[in-house]
Image (tube, rainbow, N blue to C red; front, side, top):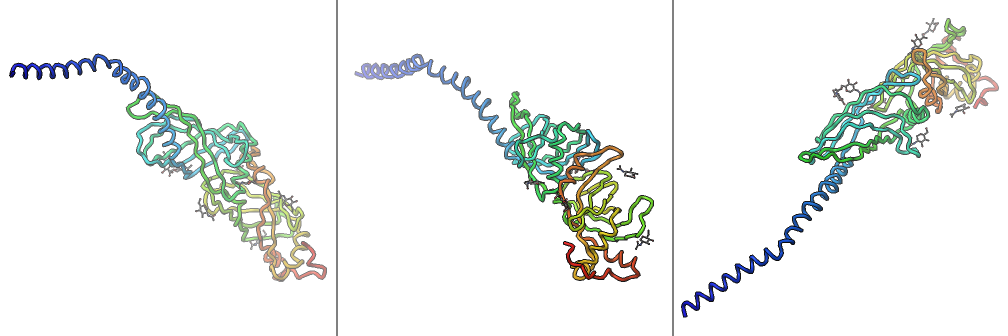
Length: 346
Ligand SMILES: *[C@@H]1O[C@H](CO)[C@@H](O)[C@H](O)[C@H]1NC(C)=O
Ligand SMILES: *[C@@H]1O[C@H](CO)[C@@H](O)[C@H](O)[C@H]1NC(C)=O
Ligand SMILES: *[C@@H]1O[C@H](CO)[C@@H](O)[C@H](O)[C@H]1NC(C)=O
Ligand SMILES: *[C@@H]1O[C@H](CO)[C@@H](O)[C@H](O)[C@H]1NC(C)=O
Ligand SMILES: *[C@@H]1O[C@H](CO)[C@@H](O)[C@H](O)[C@H]1NC(C)=O
Ligand SMILES: *[C@@H]1O[C@H](CO)[C@@H](O)[C@H](O)[C@H]1NC(C)=O
Ligand SMILES: CC(=O)N[C@H]1CO[C@H](CO)[C@@H](O)[C@@H]1O
């Protein structure tokens, strides 16, 4: 009885054991497939699809800001461009981004046409990355650069995109994954030099040795983070819809903030006197005339700079200038009276 019992038990145990062995033996291929699936499909999917996707999306989430851009050494066919920028990310993925060529274009102008290509250095995915780039750019697309400068000088804000193909290297994985670095940022433009003032005005009856009969101090505000080495600029000068002369400002280097330059001009004294004697300038406006300036030429150490000249030439900027006071000084302290026929000078 007892032996029967043991036998039965032994048999049961053996059955269980052999069942287990049978399961392993029968389904070994299933384990193999599982291992193969993990090795052949899951790992590569993670490595080839998931990691690059995460890397790309982390890169897309990172934010780029321009802290400063300096354009110097402006020449007809080249210029120097330096950029101080910051990339901010959540810093959760440890990765290195290879150096790349970043093409810059205006986001809101189609077709997207690069005006510059900058060599960006290798960066990491740290929370805060300071990226400074400095290089000489050969001007390959004058039209695109001129358009960019036009927008920079005239618009209140503009959107710039920096785009480049690069690779990301994730810590612990030897592969480098191709990713696209593409950042669009909004930056302040110079808004047509709005807020420019001309003070310390002086007028002479006879032109000086340079042919100028008007002098003043121009204050040009720069609301952008761009520093622009423009050079010697001349401007068309319009008064009440008519061209009345040329304005000269030398060595224009526009820093962010307020910039002050001496200015001189050759103006048609007759047209100025007529305007001063007309309403509302002879009474209400007290001799303050709306001078309109538009870029004419730009030269930097003898080289014409079309990408600034044409940008400055695209826009009329009105500046209210007190010409009544210096003219009154010439007239023994008496302001120009309203002429009997005055008032129709608009
Ligand atoms: C970048 O920062 C350095 C140090 O503050 C400064 O000297 C340089 O002019 C800056 N360059 C630009 C392009 O803003
Ligand atoms: C990079 O620019 C930042 C300002 O944005 C400045 O503090 C830093 O000194 C600059 N570094 C170099 C190497 O120019
Ligand atoms: C910027 O200014 C240009 C003309 O100077 C204009 O055509 C363009 O629409 C402006 N863009 C934006 C985004 O304001
Ligand atoms: C205006 O210019 C004349 C001639 O150059 C000069 O004599 C005079 O002092 C100037 N006046 C002022 C207020 O600058
Ligand atoms: C600037 O103003 C002048 C005079 O009123 C006008 O002839 C010219 O067409 C204007 N130019 C632009 C670009 O607005
Ligand atoms: C501007 O013109 C003056 C006088 O002709 C010259 O001495 C100076 O070098 C010029 N400046 C530039 C930046 O070209
Ligand atoms: C007068 C003026 O426009 N000032 C601005 C110049 O630009 C800086 C930044 O670059 C602004 O902070 C100023 O308000």
